[in-house]
Amino acid sequence: MQEIEPFYNWLEYYTSEEDEASPFFGKEYNEFEFTNTIYNYFIHPHWDEFGSATLYLKVLLADYETGVAIIEFIGEWNDTLYNDIMFLKRDVIDVFIGNGITKFILIGENVLNFHGGDDDYYEEWFDDIEDGWIAGINFREHVEDEMIRTHIDRYILLGAPFNNLNWRKYKPQLLALFVENMMQKKLGVG
Image (cartoon, rainbow, N blue to C red; front, top):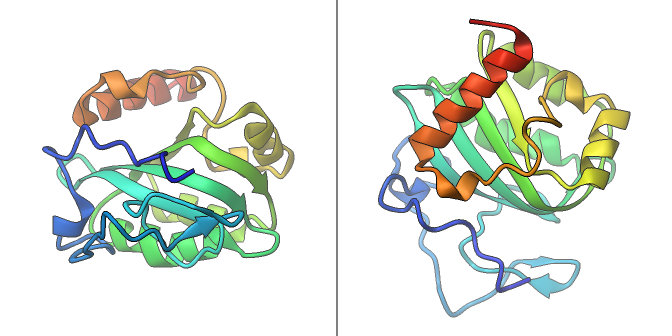
């Protein structure tokens, strides 16, 4: 797992540790010290922790002009045991919403499992962004199935056309525009 790095080809466009509005502003990374683990496997030190014991993330873009954030995840999303959504909402999402972000792209191809719990924080997140949206792209089929089974899909748009999206071929702002256009088509807006 330590070989799985957050996507680094967009560093010229955005780095969360240099963004004063980011919850990870000022963070320094040690390339040689692997301290965080998932299932007792060390993960790459560039993944950011936010209070979860099993889920880590990397903010790949926060564009305050367009109101879009792109966040990549790794690990097990476990609301049942660890209430990961509470930590994500309070310690990351609320910070971005407070700075005008209302559109969230969640990249889930490295989310290995999902264990749902209450949907209160998802509902709050959805209510807080009013005219915004939350899109989940490239979540594994069994993870997406569990999210749908626990009704998280009421708040995070999943499935076609967001599965198997080759998002790495885009520049971050173009990915955001592409996903926004897909969101409008899916929701029948615009």
